[in-house]
Length: 318
Image 1: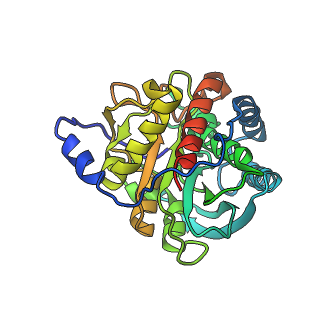
Image 2 (image 1 turned 90 degrees about the vertical axis):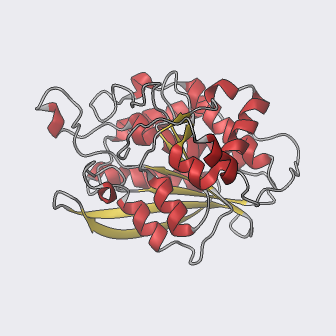
């Protein structure tokens, strides 16, 4: 998870109102009931992600995790594309980057983009013990939770006749950065935004998932998301209310957060929302960027709420 700050929001309703004028939504055209997100399968995949080890770019664990994501997408019927490059990190490491794109219904002209980073931070710099700071973060919530939500949505859509297509974007090298250099984060995302595949790729909108599995998590609107995609936030809240999940998506504000959604929105020229959990004090949970970011803090219920809400949103769009 990238850098963040916390500010006051008393005047931001004006921003939200103006952002909601984006004219790309149409009336729902449903074909049966929405597919069901399997939270138990998602939790089992969290355990798999954890068992494979921290997916630090360039490590054998990263190779294994990327291969697992690819095979799981293919098993769900998705067409898989890979985008490989390399980049220099803020601390002088040259690392490989491997973005993965799973395309459902690739022939559809109307497309939606769902994204998450799948890499792990190479050092647990929020640990109090200096020795632990040199070890990688397990990244089960800050990485793995977004991965399994995307995989779960792909599986739920398998075999369904869709009037739209969905692109599942698994972004690499997101979390190897330093707060003093915002662009040192999201290296894989910056590359994809500048070199989208397929060429000319332009979805209707995108939703980025980051730290979406924690026990007790809620997802207020993030400031940059309001500025870039206020109408999408309203649609998420509407879908959540329809399912009885409105308490998980309160009409309050967090952030701003420098995350993948900024580069995707600005680079592709489309609205992108960041679904991300912060505490009421504007902080990330205590296990963030520590060795404690494990499956101990993951909730099946939270995974279900996030995955099912986004499926409902897609189902209510044409």
